[in-house]
Amino acid sequence: MNRRTLLKRSLAAGAVGVAVSAGLLTPGQVLAAYPKDAFAAKDVGSALKAALGSDSMTASGDIKIKAPDIAENGAVVPVTVSTGMGDVESISILSEVNQNPLIAVFNLPAAEPYVSTRIKMGKTGNVVAVVKSGGKLYSAKKEVKVTIGGCGG
Image 1: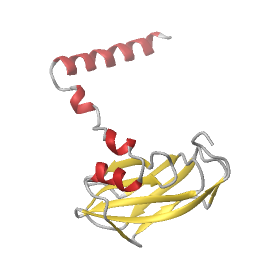
Image 2: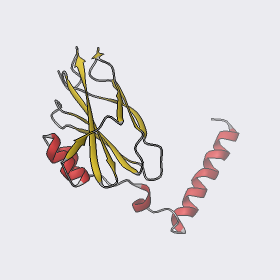
Image 3: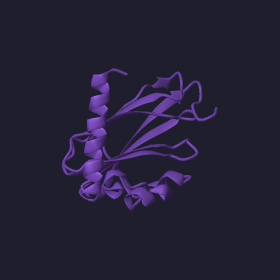
Image 4: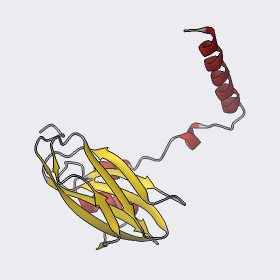
């Protein structure tokens, strides 16, 4: 380690220490809320009810899911979800065939309704995107065929 790197890291650690001691940076503000019941749910309905408060969805053509038709490896399936809806509060991604179907919930207050990530899929099945807009849930599905399972399969 050279001298310049040591100085930068020391200053950064000192700044964080001052922020913590002044009460500007607390663990409650830094850590995100984790909906444990939603991620432990065994079916789509109970996962949505625990994460978003409801499991009643309306199918919508305004939601676009970009995912491969055939995923060679279920451990890394790229998925992109976007929508042109207004007043989007969150976007959730689920895999109907996984043991725990809820993969991610993205809260998007005042942000562009677009998310892109990589998910794990155990076997061939539907990827479900759920958009919460105006207090209501809208969904879209896309089937992804998996040749090698990513969840221990």
